[in-house]
Length: 350
Image (cartoon, rainbow, N blue to C red):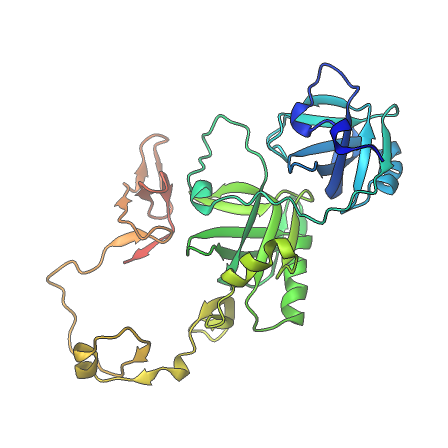
């Protein structure tokens, strides 16, 4: 086997020649339908952790799959480089690798079990905007599943597809909305049936940043994403343990009509002690307790609540009932959130 120095780093690849030789690991692969026919897409990483997307036509798919298996290393020579484009880029690399009939693909005896994660920061994700001029690329994100909803079957693009919505929480308490479709929702459904009442840590590779109702949302990029539930890989095990909170477990949350609506992390209020008003006033420690009382009166003289955005809990501005730009009457009240920088309807008293 040739030494590592004989291979080109992925950062050095350019489109002006095709005599490149790289040693890469197959992180993910999927089949994709395009207007020009089926293609086989691969996400590759080199020894230095740089990633790139590779593609080949359907006639070469089985040869590439045989020589470059998922999670294994291989050597690729004489490939072409083209600018990475489209609405989303799978990696941050400015080029995409094209495997042709002249390309040589063979296995490698290199052993390296690293996942080559590039975990995105939640605060940076929240700063993303739909008006950005840069072409966004897919990200890796990990978090604890919070407010897990029921798996639903909805009509999308003319066919029935499964969907699940929840929120992801990082180790600092920041959270992100998440919506997964198709096989990813089915994967969560099967995991819940097998491992009930357990905290779920979710790692999504090649996740897409979406914008829904003025809020940043994480979703799967069709089949380009890959999901791990409660991952046990050494590379993420320590982070998984930090995200796990043994005091907070997933428990069903029921609406007043008695039907199961969704699952969210909640305290077991049956274990909380009942306190009197005087005990709460005199208390000097933070603890979970219950108070049983009757409402004597409601103060209406002062504005003790405000209407705020459910995402940021910040005060919102109520917009007129008429859209003067289009001269149409709004079906429901619309509010303006300066934090979301958008018109929203997801508000409530705060």
